[in-house]
Picture 1 (tube, rainbow, N blue to C red):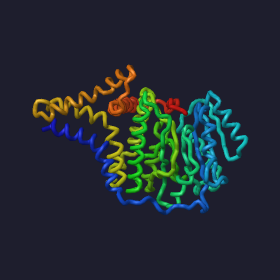
Picture 2: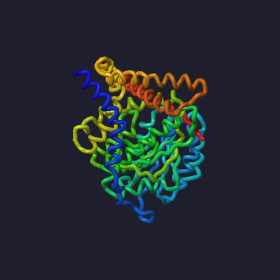
Picture 3: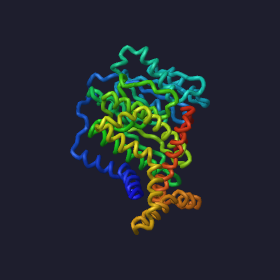
Picture 4: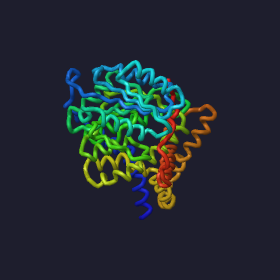
Amino acid sequence: MIFEFLFFLSSGAVVYSYALYPWLLRYLAQGKTENVEVWNPDDKLPIVFVVVSAYNEEKVIHGKIESVFNSTYPADKIRLVIGSDNSSDMTDAIISKSAAENNRITFKPFSGRNGKSMVMNTLIEELRNSVPEWNDSILVMTDANVFFTEETLFQLTKHFKNKSIGQVAANILNKGMRNDGISFQEQAYIQRENKIKYHEGILWGSMMGAFGACYAIRTPCWKTIPRGYLMEDFYLSMNVLSMGFKAIKEMKAVCYEDVSNEMSEELKRKTRIQAGNFQNLSSYWKLLFRFNAVSFCFLSHKVIRWFGPVLILASLISNFFLIDKHWFYFLTFWLQCILLLSPLVDFILKSTGIHIRLLRYISYFYAMNYALIKGMLMFIKGVKSNVWSPTQRNIS
């Protein structure tokens, strides 16, 4: 009975978080409308501070700057603030040239590697102390390799007319797709997450974490990021919800990002993300006990997944002790074993030039859960630094 309980609890939790929860949200969201208390383009719009932390982004930084100012948002209301985290390539020279030509660009080069969170903390603290209209402004946090459309800034900002909304996430679309890696699998994951977060937002205003690639936040909702934290985007998202504000996703606020293709690069990134997840769990675990929509989404969407590797292992071990009890357990045990071997099979086929997309989806799932184990151990050992180099992507 104990092993049966453990088997159904662990496997059921994984199925629930990855399959049933998204379906439930989609079902509940039928007929629901987005926030309608929005600004119109001809309204008096707030000043927007677009904040970028850059490190060795010479390939993309000029295009990023152009995309920020090539906007339908009023030109006199856009400010671009860029911090360069001791870049060793031509990033600083490119930004300096742009700043000399455009007085709406503020550039701050940093000496030594500080990490994205510390760069953001410094930039925003300086803004807070120097901008008279700070409390009425909007922050747009974004990465250097993420390109805006003409409508991105307005679509993000329009929702802040509603005083209950504290954060609005962009809709990240991917480019640079290739068959020889995990481009399509990573794209599928991101687009599925976009839908889940959108539904959480329109149902309860409890979107579980904006993608750090691009999101907007009210200045009063900004909170200094603790030193050494790896997932500053989720930390700020949860702070918005803990303050009683709503967090939503605007699907019309489109941004384009070059997607990761190399499994090794994505494993490193997911490992770092998982360590950051547990840092945030240590900060916001009390939200699980509010027993409201935020608690429900936090547990269903995030916490269960963070413990996914433990649940998968528990399912396999308990299934092993049940294998001779019924044909069902015999079948599920060997099915789990076959699925666990998928990354190895995919690797062998890939080395011969064979790319089976369905197999790679399964391989991607287990490989990412392996990264979650590594991240969990990284958190337990103690995160030594939040400084890292950008993930290699298919820049096009």
